[in-house]
Length: 587
Image 1 (cartoon, helix red, strand yellow):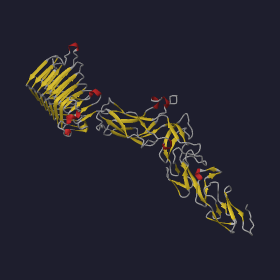
Image 2 (cartoon, rainbow, N blue to C red):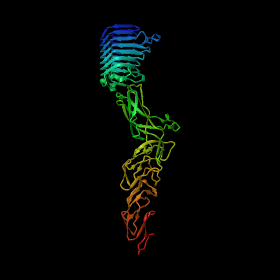
Image 3 (cartoon, rainbow, N blue to C red):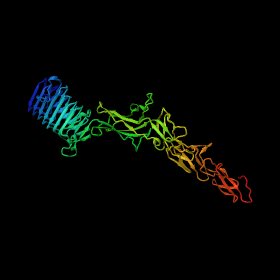
Image 4 (cartoon, one colour):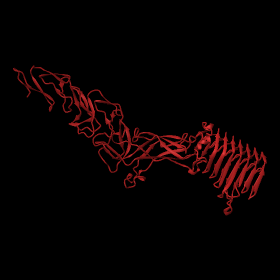
């Protein structure tokens, strides 16, 4: 037992340790290396066993690390001197490390190359803390470890890499080895993990029954901080072969995501964007889904803590036409629930976009925005605070013209943008506003003459239920079309074209079209109307020589009398009487 490093053996300063067939049992170190700690020393061990050994920091059985930079005299790992540490036929059983490498740990804290080889090793029931590697762990940019014909079984860690973990830029070559029933409680890698830019190269590997219940990669996990950190297959196969050596279905490896392979954050995807069939309307809700993905396109479901947000991309930074020349940014605004916390790697955000319009014309209908509405999603990876997550820039598709808002809505703006104008200053959209009960809109650009788009009051002869829902009890009503000269009605207004015979068509006040007054009015019992399709013809008193009923002249009191309509005055005129009668008051 040692209060520091090396519970049984401590070696340093170019010392050489050679061991053959030694059994280390129940050794304990308060630092690293439960049985052996070798610092800047050469270690060669053949057929040794490390049983129930424990270290408070790294390497429950053995810890080897290089602290010095040897300059011109460093040991070349490819040279004749071979590796600085070599363990052949070791057995690590039930060894425990408080941080990394339950059985064995290699570290290089200098830039000098450091090499270690492990051959025919057996790692079983090893345990490591949050540093990872329940059986074996390596760390350091100069550290290279070769593992040949070894087994890792039943090893666990609170960190990543239940069997084996390569960290902090180290390189590890693993060949003809198997991993059975190992588990990682950290970000992933039930069997193996490559962390901090480390590289693991694999050849002829099998993984069965390994688990990463709180992370990704039941078999292999790499953190993805650098593209070159990607673990590789030495046989030119896709990496998932490590889970299917006999063609079985992932051989019971399991994880929160990626039962075989998984990585940390690689890409941030925004989906569910408005498209041609389902566009976004100014100021109205639309939903996007944000997905945090690994290198294999799998959702990183272990993340329920990263905060993400969607923001507008300033057009001024992409297109010089997106400002007024005075430095004012007229890019689209994004509002609504723009910030969210991921839930199992996903977030749904309900947004609204308010574009800047340079043109709003009623007749012919036309709208134009100052550049596209661009949005981007971003956040900081809560599982690795050094990583910023950023999606691609996406355009929010906004319809134009008569399609700029859905039926029953009008396009409202904060300033300018009056129908028929093309203001140099433009107009920021308030959004598409739905018409309340008692008003209506069938054209989002419609409104009263000389005014911006607005909901229209319900005509006297109709019942408006809100939106575009209008019912008319009587009369023939049509929507005034764009580009067609008419009787003063604006495009998109309901216009009363005719009433039932005997009822007066009301659509004008003082000779001008009056949208709000439109209705069919029943003539009094002693009056009539000669034409129910013309707004300038009103009910008239029934002539003395005629009989009126239901607003119509139904008969002449003297048979043979001739009456003709005078549409200019809106009356019937008696033009002749039968013989024996005198025409009074006629033509």
